[in-house]
Image 1 (cartoon, one colour):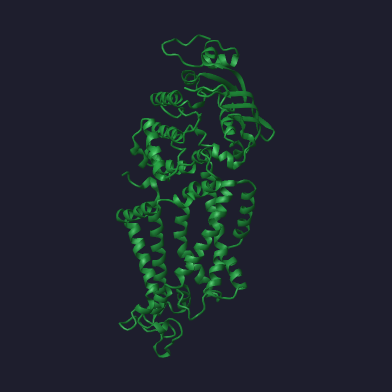
Image 2: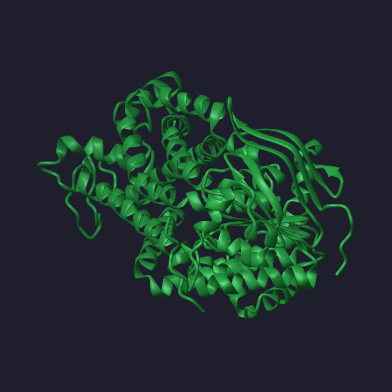
Length: 266
Length: 294
């Protein structure tokens, strides 16, 4: 695995505001090459807005964004809409909480792959289809799923398909916004395993957003805990979980149910 | 260019429609009836027993004859063969309806999509414009437009279309606004899809269903509006075999000579039913959630 020294994505002084209300203020957030960074925190703490801002999509929901977002040292904030569209999907892919809802219901899965791959530079429809089939095998799904409509997929299958799309696009960064929250526990474990494998085999960098510290702690190398738009604490997953420095992190860690242990009396 | 190379897979969609015809008798019936109307209009000069009666000829000695072998639908107050006029009418009313609805869609859909998807100022401006049009009763507004223009079929079409498009803009706008907030639109943006393509490929197909149904329901409404204008002397003028005009002129004879109103009225009814069935059937067949797995 090739880990270059510079971070893949580096966010500095990122401020996101709706009107006068500032919802996110991040001093510093780094995502290294081939790293899985967990972004944890309660709902409304600004995790998803941060991911949208990285893709330059925060303004489309009415937010004002300022600061610096470096992608391989290049500031995404200065890019035109056209240049950003090239980054989205092809370089940085995003997957969402409702896997079925993130597919347009009128397109078959195969059609979706072909359109997206051609949009991002696949040479031909045939090549796109081959890449799609290969990507589906990469997420352990049969290529026959390409003939299905999104509503004919289960939640777990749909999320795998979404990941396969990122795989087929050969995206270098995956922004995963609560990708497992809508899935049941066994399927959730499979998706987490899949994301880990993508990192190990492909060296993909992953920003994994979740309110669920148990999930984050299982998967991530480093964790940043957010609250009210600011990072409360960040560090290697092991350190942060075994010895949380901040009260908020302690509270979050304490809130994770532990199998086989009685709930600590408080 | 990508758009041309990857236009929606036409043959397959056509195959879906053909397959749907087999499974969906509603669609098949609607299509068959529509075909009958189109053929009636196209072949009117061949099919009609007395083609001259469609326009200029009058027969003062044969007025108001009952339906018979010579005149299957009877004759009107000027002695013209009613079957002939009803057949030629298929070239007038359905065509007016077609163009009114076409213009309304061409104007209404893009404006509605833009308003619903972009929201904000665009939405406000467009919706206030539609408000202005919708503030007047449709028929009254059409009357005003028709009165300003010279009475002719083309101008009738234009006048009705002017009052019709705001409804479609409204309808599409509501759908588009709801679709614009769905996650797959966000996902498409996150994949780097442009606004134009999102509008055409994602918002439009997911917003169009209610409009298809509305358009199919509006066919008869347009025909009746056009006939109301004709009745008031602002639409098609007398020798024109317009169904609406024939109904309104036959009204005074209805109690004694029923066929004057009944046959053109039945033609309007047939057209309305045909297009309603066609619209309903198309909606069922083109909705992927109703297509069986293969």
